[in-house]
Every structure is written in C-alpha cells, then in structure tokens.
Length: 421
Image (cartoon, rainbow, N blue to C red; front, side, top):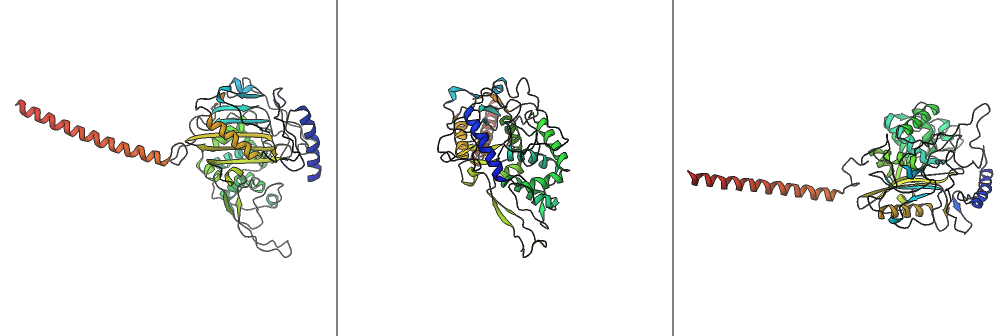
C-alpha cells in the first residue's frame, strides 16, 4: 500500500511545477491546506490544460495492472453541452453582473440557478478533473433508482478495509441500504460505497450503471472509475457534469433530506472474536463533512465534499435565500490558512444570490437533464409555507366576495323583474 509520506511528497513536487506555470493551484504536505502564507494565484486555464484529461497523477493510484489497458480519453463534444460560451476554458461571466468572487483557488468552478438551470458564471466548466468523493452523488442516484432503502446489508471484510473515510461498518453489524446511503453522503464513507456497489451487482456492474446514468443526464465529461471517488485510471468529470448530477439528485426527496442532515446515528456492531480484548462497538453519531452545513451557514441546503491527493479539494452544493436556490461546484482547489474552501464557497453563493434572475452564460437544461424546478413538494424551498398560507387565505376571501356579489346580483335582478310584471 502507498505510504502517506510518499503520496504527499509527490504532491509537493508536482505542486511546485504547477505554481511555476500558473496552470493549477499548488498542492502541499497537509491535505488540502496551504501553509506557505503566500496567497495562492488564481489558476489560469485559458490554454485548456484539462480539455480532454485531468492533470497527471501525483502518485501511482492510476497505474493500471499488468496486462490491462489505460482507458482512452473521452471524446470532447462539439458543440459544447450547455451552450457555446461554456466551451471556453477560462472564466465565463457577464461583467454586468458584478465583480467575481475573489481568491478562488479552484481550477474549475461553476455557479448556477438550481431551479432554472441557468449558469450564472463558470471557469473551465467542461475541463476534465477528478471528482474525489463528489462522485458519490452519482452513485446515490443509482442507489435511489434501483435499491430498496429498507433492504438489510451484511458487512464484509472488504467493506471495513476500504481506504479513506469510513462509516464504521464491522462484522455482525446490522445495516440497511438507508444507513449506508446516509453514511455515504454525510461522512463520505468509502466502506458504505463498497457495500452499496456490492448490492448493485458488484464493482464492474455498478460502474457501468453510474456511467450509463451520467450519459443519460447529458454528462459527457464523466467516467466513473471507482464508486467512492478514490482515484483510478480513467476517472474524470467536470464542473458542468457535477452540477447536472447534483441538480438531478436534489429533485429526490430522500436525497434532499439526507443532504440536510447535520448528524446521523450509525449502527454499531458486536465485539470481534478475532480481536483479543475487543468490546462491543455501540452506535455512534456521525457529523456532516460539509462545513457550511455544520456551522449553520444561512440557507445551506446541503453539499458533498471531496479530497484526494490527485483531485485536491472538490465540492458541490446548494443554498437558498429569499426563495432563490443557487448551486455551486468547486474542483481542483485548496484551503488557505485565511481562505478556507468553505469560505470560498460562501463567496460563490453570495455572487449567485446577487445576480439578476435572468443572468446566464449557458444552461444545465440539456437533453436528459432535469428541465423543471427540482422542488415538487410542499417544503420551504421555492416558496415558503407562510406565502402559501397567505395565498390560500386570499383565495378563500376572494371566493366569498365573488359569491356575495353573485347573490346581490340575483336579488337585484329578481326585484327588477317583479316591478316589470
């Protein structure tokens, strides 16, 4: 297994080269955090460095096994999905909307209206990047489409041995698909991703279903090569595609409810007989990996974080203000000591909220994607309950007035007819 030291050392070396060319943010030894004290330059992507494939891997995570073939790059659609302006590799925005958010360390990003699908602004929207755990949104779409949430699932050694973030599955634990889906999205559990993939028919079958779903939604920059987002040969997506996935997922009530959870009680499991002195592992309360939701950032509906040494930091999420729902995507970026990734996300949301409702440089409403508003229930998303109650009250009053006028009119007419006899 690769050691953390080797991976992070490689990340530092690669980052030095990237900063020199100003084509990507610098990577550092502490995962996702810049400690140089010097503000990171805004990555320059005008020359399309990610047009067909992500930047080279900094470790051996994408080296294929002997005898296997490295996946070929995905074709680049022409014309670009979402409109011709979104075919640009640099910043795509309307200057009339106002100054763009400052100090964004992401190489690719996107801001859109969640309801209409209008893209308000973007940077390298169709650039190919590694998704890290944001690809779990695509896995969630497949799970919600194919699995019964109440189905029991038995953990295997492969589940609790998965690299990376974990839900805490163990032998003898009693789990449901709902538990695993929640753990997948709340704490980004790779053990839950592995178990869900098994329920979907195994790794190869799951990846085929994820890629088929991506194609159906119009996502042409995406190839899922692992269900969890761990780096693997051929893996790629884009800010545009991640926006498609999250917008589609937010149309599902179960997904929205899970995304809004700040905590969740995940089942424990019995003591392991193969571990001397082990004791029962009780249920535990997991907390969301989304800092904006955790810290009660106003209007946060939910979002999915991600990080690997090759993908750097990624995020896709949505927030609401005054009935306006804004979606953002961040890819291949870093924290800074005084400029965290979540602070950058907040500035992107603010830009989206401040933009005119008709501001657009492109659209997420491509063939196969969700065309209408994702919100089709009676919760406080597109319209508040107070507003709905007010409209109902006025409707009742209006009908009552109309009925009274009709009655008065009938009485007047009857009086006139009696006088004419």
